[in-house]
Image (cartoon, one colour):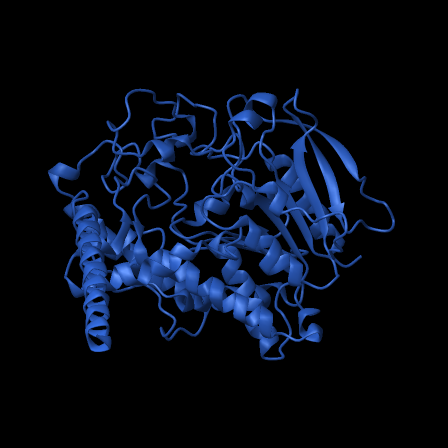
Length: 488
């Protein structure tokens, strides 16, 4: 009897095992079929560029990086722009010459690295854009410093050309490029202060640059670090990115290398997103978290003061990670965090599906060692905002605990977004104002309405806020921070 029971149990176990295995295989096959049924890949998804910078590229100086970039864009012109097929000749395709999305319609090619020197500049600013972006992402901030400082907007490897540049990218490629740019700026400034301003992945690379130095008992390079929507932590699902990419390579299914395949209508940002790009950010975030946790208290004191601007609502990076994995582990120094809350009018508050704010603010009994500011509605009946301090407040009371701002939430806007922070209202591409004299695409001013499922551009992308109504406040805080860290 005992043998019969044991045998029956084994049969049940194997039956359950094979049933689960069958279900897993069926789900995998279904998922692969779904992903592979997406739009066909275009030339800019499949072309390999030979002149892109890599972490093992032997360059002696930053001018060599610019020379290689020149060759890279010539290669793009020969391999892609001159070979676009008639089926891809859309009036809003960035790779079609003279289209509304042709970067040449702008007076400056913002897909390229740019440098604006200033004689006897009192300080320097290094600008680092985010994943799938280009230096255009930092153009509004760069304009603020033009003529005031030596400004360098770096094109990170894999960016500004074609989306396929992100399929074979490593985070070490980004770090190596930032190393070159930082050494160049330090040489140009001759000991004067250097500030780095990084957006999203650019912020993560800037943080990594300093953590790697401090971990090696070396002095940091930056006088201060300013972050916008920094990629400190991502959702756990990001860890699966490399598996999707690996399966795609194994089965020779190129479409599995992509999270999204879209028309490239944005002149300065890829709209198609490679699976590998998400994994690069994830691996970089893990490296930074490992470095941070491994630093001694004395080493953490050497981290340059960080000023961060973060939207409470962020679908790309984790707002909670910015607080818990970065600011909660920083020592008491001069670190500052500005959170942009959601638009909490009565109607908006009733429609919100979830509220991440409570998890970001400290409890009344918590002790935090950074200066925190929340940009919020003055009350539920108005769209005017105020700056409310929380956490560490300077003892000299130079900054009020509560400051009314002459800024409002725009009509119809219920929150900021990950991508909105670096852009002002009057930005020529992502801003809200339409200039009819400019015969080119103006993404932020678009207001298409119709049935869902008709446009190739996802409705969620059109809905996303593209510009920051509180950009002037952000610049004010950046100037205050910079002034506090410059020698008298």
